[in-house]
Image: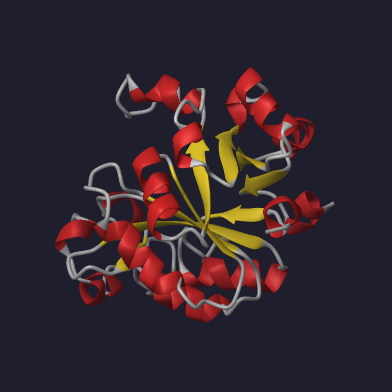
Length: 244
């Protein structure tokens, strides 16, 4: 999986004016720019994996609604704010668009669900996909699910200092120190930039394991990431900047 250290990843696609986050337009722009894609998935009411960051649609569409209570067809009718009428896509829609031209990191938003259904929905979509793809999650149980059920899928643990996060207080130090990595055996680590460097991440890299920093938003962030990590998840920067 050499791309995990070689190809910068656009955070929720290459979004900006006219291209909402996690939209097909943002993903198309990333493909055209030759950068990878980081995206978020939830499971919708009819069991498909859909590409959206929040469990509640209010922020990204301006309309109330819970992803888990809507079908993929209904979500396609929720217009993303700042776009040109496009709705919430499925993971299948995105993979069809990308077509293996750039790598894709799929972050599963699975803390509010029992482990299994979302993980299986994502696996169903990426099985047989001809292109670079990996899964990642804050939830160690999700990473462990792929270790057990899909050994051939590249899996990453998303972690960080997570200060101010809504995650349970007991979980934050476990993720910061990667306490469960010995069990879940991730192939790479996706770590919050503001928490780097630290002894756990440095020890991880010292063993030759890939470390991706999130989220890089300016040149100072980029310099910090280049000194402490092997790759970046970025937004608000030109692809030429992060590739250079």
